[in-house]
Amino acid sequence: MNRKIGVLALQGDFEAHRKAIERAGGHAAEVRTAADLDGVDGLVIPGGESTTMLKLLEEERLFEPLQRFGREKPIFGTCAGVILLASEVRDPSQPSLGLLDLTVERNAYGRQIDSRIAKIDLEGKPCEAVFIRAPVIRRLGRGSKVLATYQNDPVLVEQGRHLAATFHPELGPDGRIHRRFLDKVERNRAEVR
Image 1 (tube, one colour):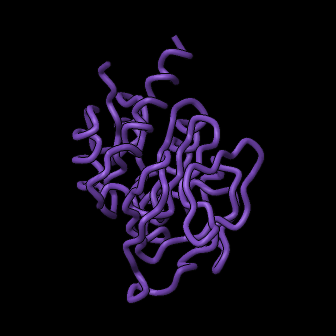
Image 2 (spheres, rainbow, N blue to C red):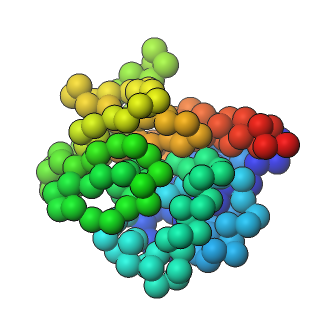
């Protein structure tokens, strides 16, 4: 399996995702332009600052190419990446790619000082979840599968070919979530052949 995963490298913790993808068995490539999307089988949109990312997406003319990419290939959004993927964003409202039928509330766990490391259950085993000014998923669209919760809120969700984590799995030692995304990418590749 030669899975090449792009990591949106405009802002945020893209370097940690690159390392996590490689630990999970994939090959990572930084994506900064629309042309960079052509050579990847899946994409990670990392955490960071969603309004800054939106501005950079517009400046680099990446907004529409990302929407097209997400209609055909898997995207894994973490924290701010979930905000960018959602169909509706609250507190405050902002544009988004609309690739996941979700409503998210920005910074719903509080400010930077309220960031935390929590244990969640993933596939019957504990998993470390790092929440940094994390969004909360307030509404799940049809076809959503909740893979993990924290304080009764969904924090890891699958919807179609996409994956969304409101926390930062790349900052913890557990590689299961990145491996799950690599498996989704491989399945998508097999389906389009």
